Amino acid sequence: MQDIAHYDFLLTPPVGIPPFPAATIYPREINGKPMGHHVDWMLLTYAITVTGLAAISVPCGWAKRGLPVVL
Image (cartoon, rainbow, N blue to C red; front, side, top):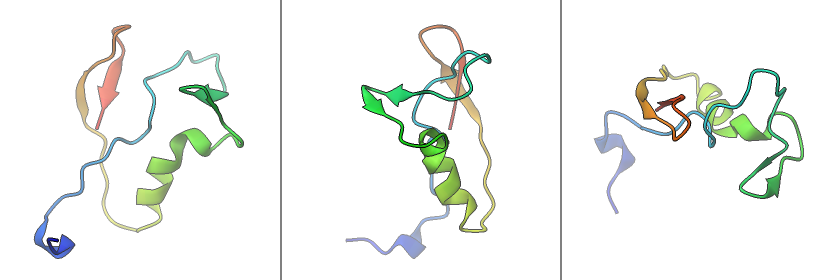
């Protein structure tokens, strides 16, 4: 197993779903799994934020519906 200190960057998606309509307050489920709380859909973002390290979301492509995807 490699030492994590060897890496300069940690690349993760900021959220686990593509963009949803602005009128939707938050997604009620993802891939059939119900969201128990309104922040469950953005736990990846929360996990990085609490580390106190620098973070950035960068556009990296387009979803099937033509909406942007970020990394």
